[in-house]
Length: 121
Image (cartoon, rainbow, N blue to C red):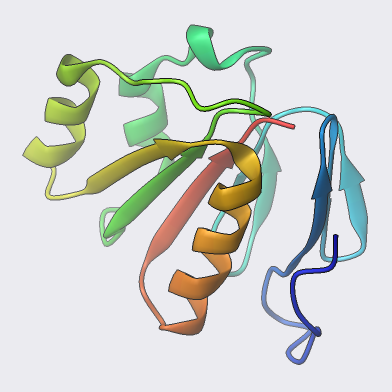
């Protein structure tokens, strides 16, 4: 599924998603990735349920407004404790399936929001 036409090659652009694979800026990823508008990093965990939220908060920049968690094919919940950790730092956090997470990330980047996404294929 193609999300949008790539118009700025300096920005991270999610080109497509299918279960098990995310296409970002001309690269295919089959393992979790942490992205913002200008960088892509593979994320060192194999499953959504193993996320160390303290480590994730440390990995994102202090000016981040929103963190989107793409949980894979199906939506998964995050704990109230994890949400509270983000909120204490002034960061909104939302978990959703990876397909809508990819779309939401692109919309927020287009709106020039400071957004980070952790996406599980």
